[in-house]
Length: 156
Image (tube, rainbow, N blue to C red):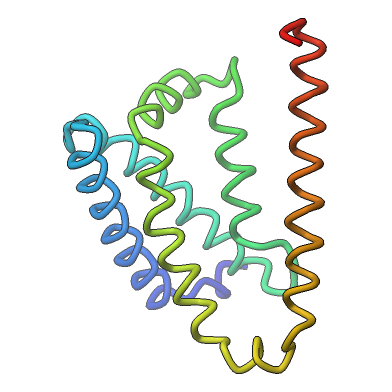
């Protein structure tokens, strides 16, 4: 069962995650003044969860479920109240600023899109129309959910 896990690739993934984690910690220290040593345990926990997600993706290669989905489920399970380690998990991960994570994430997304520029050219103007429809739909869906929640809370 564990034959599907490529240890060499997992080693590279761990190395990249550690480098990105260091970038996040440094960015968070520069922008928010949060000590690297304060945030380090939370970052290591997040890296461990991400590595488990990558290994789960390797264990189920025919699954169309992405590694990001596995990481989300792992994070959910670790943070559920009543879980014996949820208090420690939530306390440590709370030291990581969300915006510090988005900077390298968006950089990697840009590199990923840049590698597929020929495919984007082939879609030509159609990608613009699809993007506008998706962005507009997401905007109105988020605005509607926000309105409903604020209405339920009695804020508006």
